[in-house]
Length: 159
Image (cartoon, rainbow, N blue to C red; front, side, top):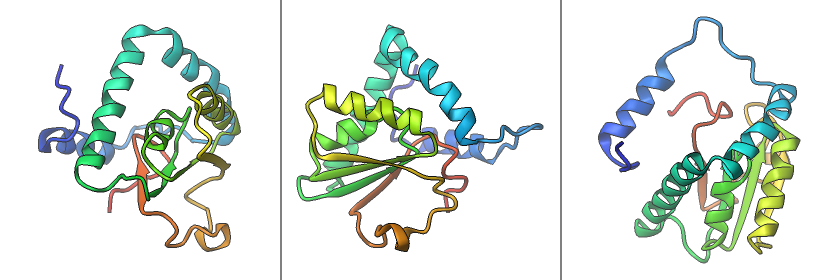
């Protein structure tokens, strides 16, 4: 298995997957993700192989961002579609402050719990549909040094 998450081959693979449109697309709603939240979180806590794959991807991503000067002690970060908050927690180990957003309040409950378990107090979470969010109204316009998103339906295009 290729564990280099930051190479051109991986980028092209993810972009090609993003361009594929399923025949019957899933309607990503708050209700759907609220229903999926428990199983998603359970898998990350109980499935050792999944937990390790996730840990490696998150650690490699954070190290890449740190090594390129994109994630540092003075940074404010937002993770769009943060799910159960694993990237939020990793980024909060370095950043001044990290905000996680997700469509699902249940996912955000798991994210907040995970960050508390890690002893992190420099995080917050906001339930919102990012595709419809008014960043000016939320006070987020030009607020963040790093805007991050990973494998989420909250962002449907890479341009």
